[in-house]
Length: 195
Image (cartoon, rainbow, N blue to C red):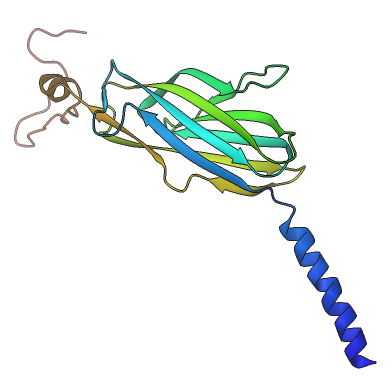
């Protein structure tokens, strides 16, 4: 009696585990940057194209996709191939810390065996951007309360920025703070200045 009840409970638990594990779709992300990291882009003038390929081995409805750009990159153009019908442009959100998030909402994979989408973002490097910028991407499902089944890039896409030497030194160096000599009296206005 005890062993049959234990066996039924074990089978019930096993079916729950397989049901929960099959809830998340099998998603794979891969990124490519043009021009490559060796060549890089010129700060303030050059553009890079970041392509993230999302593969799904399962049919998925209402998948959301996000590309997170670091401070120093600005969005020039976005695209998704194949595009959704009807076409809905991505939402671009710029945060106060300088990062930019690009959201594609309602991505569907309706084919039974597999599906593929390519998300392209053309970016421009700011004049004083750091030399190495890491771009990350996420695919996830959202229900009424929480995000689940989050899949991210195994390695972030790296955008390399190069500079012309005299321009970086002249425009990107921080402004030094004014020095105050405590032995000299404080004068509100200097010579030739007036209120």
